Image (cartoon, rainbow, N blue to C red; front, side, top):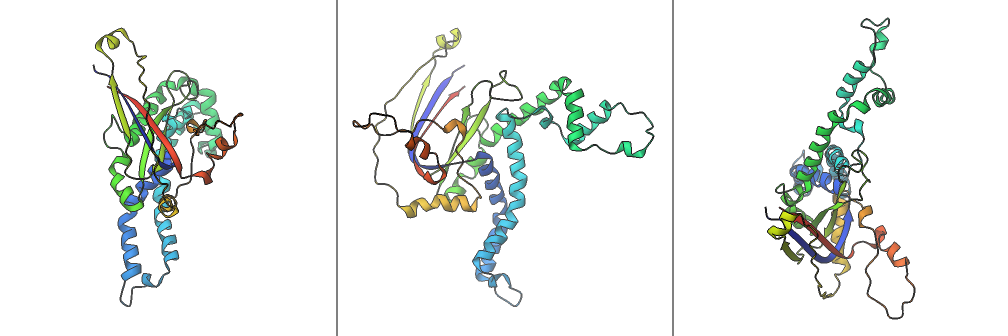
Length: 321
């Protein structure tokens, strides 16, 4: 079995955004696009006695668009967040059960008489009571029941975002649309989180995250590949190291007009600046001979929402089997 290491590096202006917000809101935008297009055309070109939309100001039409898109955003956001919670291992045991499954377990565990003295005893419990009974009487025995659901959701998340193993992701399918409509690209990568950070599986299973950035289009990344030898694979040697020095040529900075594409894309897609905890760390700066003490001001300010978009070095590595 051939194992290949892959690394790519790119330098571009970028803005970090929440992956679940981006994925869900992009799906909602794509699904709503036919309706939004008709609405805009009627507002601009509508004629006839019954053409009332053409009398609406553009600002009001934009509010109508948001009203049309928001239910789809909420629906997809719940789906994306559900799978992401399992991928990041921050889910709880009861998160893997539907309400119907919780109620079935509750009535099995409640030990009520077959004919209750009062019909009120058959009423479904409150959410607080339901969760308390399941935690007290069932959760220690329910691990196996949740295992399959947990890993199905982790696999579903990979299908949503993975660029290597699971074929075209949501972002791959709509990449040309994002570029043509907003003038930006989507860069993404999975990130391994510290061992033990997950809640559900704790230290047994790895906890991962997915980070996304909106970037300037037409990136020119540098990619490198290297493989393990048959002997290394047979002996279980996986400490292969490979490093590269990459000269950087910084051309003229983009204009403010050019950078406004980010604000427009984020406004239409309902996004905000979101820096994942895994992305925070030392800011790379040019060395200064006169600098004696480390200055943390730039490091803190570099992650503030108003600092973006900014020139960002994006690195990504992977093992490909």
